[in-house]
Image 1 (cartoon, rainbow, N blue to C red):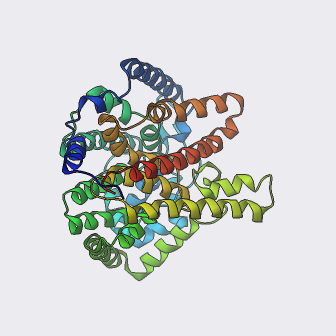
Image 2 (tube, helix red, strand yellow; image 1 turned 30 degrees about the horizontal axis):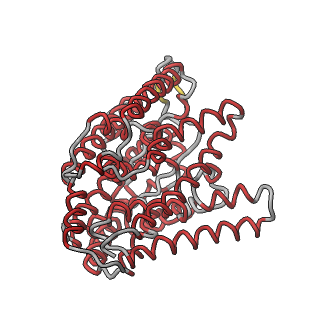
Image 3 (cartoon, helix red, strand yellow; image 1 turned 90 degrees about the vertical axis):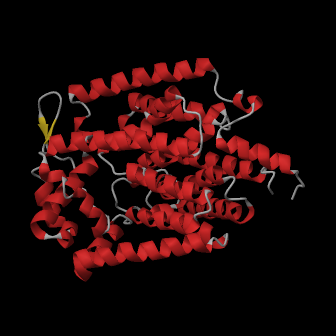
Length: 424
C-alpha cells in the first residue's frame, strides 16, 4: 500500500467530479477520431435503416417484444400465472404479425417466453392498448428517449461536463440498436445500475442496495455483484437488497400465487437448457465451451470454459476486497459487469447496453484508452459485417466470441486500473 498525501485525494475527487486538470483532458480522443466515429455511425445507420426499409431484416424486429406483448394479452385475459404457459404463448404469438416498412406483414420466426417475475409483467399490461406494430414502435421510441434522458441525468449527477456529440456517439451504438431491434427492456436495467452507483457514491448504501432488487428482472446480472457486496462487508447495501428483494418476491407471490411462481421457475430453467437456441451467439464461457466442443472432446471444452469462469470471477471479487469502492466505483462496476457477462450462464450481446453510462463518463473524464473507443465505435459492426459477407451463418457466433474477448480485456484493464489507485 503506497503512502499518499491529501492533495492526491483532492485531485482524484476533482477528476471524478468532472473538473479535470488539463493533462487529463488531453487523453480524450482526438477530434479526427470523433469525426471518423460520427461518419461511420451515419453510414451504419443509413445502411441499417435501408435494410429495415427493404424488409430484408424485418424478421428480426420485435423478437423479444412479441413475448412482452403476448404476456400483456394473456395477463389481461387469464391472469399473471397464465403468462408462463407455453401453449398460451404460442397461440397468442402466432397471431402477432409485424407490419414491415416494405408493406408486408411478417409472422413470428420463433416463440419466445418471458422469464420475468410476475411483478415485472405488470409493465406489459398497457402494451395491447395499441395494435402490435404500433405498440412495438411506441415501445422502442419510449425506451430510446428514456435511455438518452438517463444518460443526461447520470452525467449531471456526477458533474460531468456534457458533450452532446460524445453522448450521441456512445448512445447510438451496436448494443442499443440490438435492444431496439429486438424490443428488449434493458433501458430499465441501465437506470437501476446507474441509481445504485449514484447512491453508493453518496454513501446511501441502504438505498443503493434497494435499487439492486430491480435486477431480479434479470438476476444473472447479480452473480458477481452480490458476492462483491458481501465480501467487501457492505452490509447496508446487502440489507437494502434483501429487504427489497423480499418485497419483489412477496408481491409476485400475491399477484400470481404459488402456481404462478412455479411456472415462472420452469420457464427460467428452460433458459438454462443446453438446447437453448441462442447459446452459440452468447458472449460467455458457456458459448466458448459450445464452440470448442465442436472440435475438441466435450470434457476438455468444458474444462477450459470452467477455468475461464473461475479465474474471471476471482479476478473481479479480489478487487471488491482490495479497492476503494466509492472512489473507483465506475471501474469496479465495469470489471464486475464485464466479468458477469463472461461467467453468467445466460449472456446475450445486447446486455452491453448497461455499460454505456460508465464508459461514457470515463471517456468524458479522459480515462478510456482510444482502443476502447475504437472497438466500441467500430468493432461489433465491422466484425459482424465482415463475417456476414463471407458466411452469414457464422456472423452471430463470431461476434459473440469477439465480445467475449472484449469482456475479458475489459475485466483485466479495469482491475489493473483499480490496482493503480493511490488510495490503496
